[in-house]
Amino acid sequence: MNEFPEGGRAGRDDGMGSGWHSPVPPDHPAAALLSAEAVRTRCAVVTDFVASGESELFTWHPDRVHAIADYVAATIRRRYPTLQVPYHSRWRHFESGGPGQATINRWQILCERAGMSGPEHREERARIGIDLVIPSVLLDAGAGPDWRYRDAASDMMLTRSEGLGVASFDLFARGGFSAGQGDPLRSDADRLCRIDASTIASAFQVAQHNPLVGLEGRAGLLRRLGEVMQDTPAVFGSPARLGNLYDYLASHAREGRIEASFVLRTLLVALGPVWPGRLQIQGISLGDCWRHPAAPEGMVPFHKLTQWLTYSLLEPLEDAGLTVTGLDALTGLPEYRNGGLLYDFELMVPRDATFASRAHAVDEPEIVEWRALTVTGLDLIADGVRQALGLSEADFPLARVLEGGTWAAGRRVAAQRRPPGGPPPFAIQSDGTVF
Picture 1: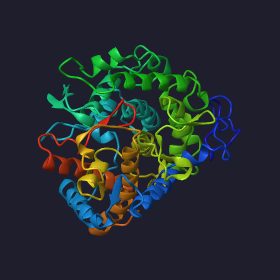
Picture 2: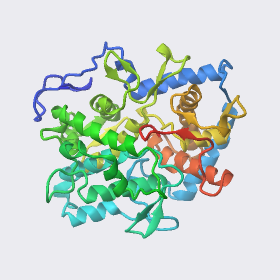
Picture 3: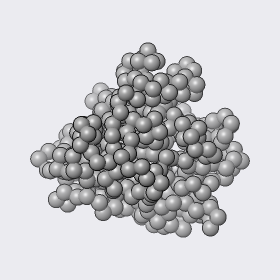
Picture 4: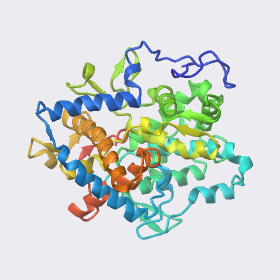
């Protein structure tokens, strides 16, 4: 694949080989699905379908929005009294210190040890940050209820996303994604192509008594990532390194500014083949996109992990001096904490009384519909949260509402309703590539 996402400057020399002309031109039928705008608009169509009473699966109760927004605003004030909320991103998990513990700035420690903390190293630091965060995000599907990771830095047992984040950070810091001796802080395609389930199992302390959901799926994602990198030298260089994505994005910034939608589009097009065999249109993989009868052409995209990755690239890009604009073009993330919050507060209510008592597959119409309602609901909640806090959208973008925020509130209400541990309100069978 030697091509550019639409919006790039086709035919220019990127310093990484030939120009990259989009494999998904504007008139390709897949193009309409590969954007955050498509996520938001098609989820809105599904929401209208449910709100009109046509759905056989859920009912919609927008009168609950105010109560949810107040709960989220109270959660934000408790966690961030000054309202200085960081972005919702993988970087928060790297700071985990365990229950009741102060955060640990592992990234700062790593950069200082590597002699990369000064301003003169900010571009290489961005490359290293991208090298770290992309594999970590791809490894961030639900771990399952029984998995734990003993963190040497805090001597704590970490679970869920925090445990996955620290485990992947430690693997990266040890050179687990590097192909070169003596240069551990990088993610090279040559190494990623050789990752197997046993590598992940060993690094993540998996054992019979400590099972990790989706182990094979996680390893498979990393191998496909390496293969796609090798096939896309215009973005990842040759030999291919994830950190070269920084140079690609920087070359397309205008006066140091780049649109969040361009970053997402780059990732959706360049990394599309990473995702396992799901829906395709004329050879183009649609990734996290599923069927729903109410959506146009019967398909509704979510791009949850790719949007999560875009949010997680904000900090290394900004550290390097780029300004990422248009953050609220991205949507909320339809996963079990955000969606669980809205479900627990009965914004959407299943018509089937047995819905929560059985496990669901990711492609079931019920799960697709619940996720679509979650995307729309998060926009409504964000508006209510800003009103409650007296902040504007510019001051408090969705990336901060999610962090402050809906994700934490989802965990909080789950712990209140389903102690101990606060599991989600219903189970979703995961292969390690969606949730």
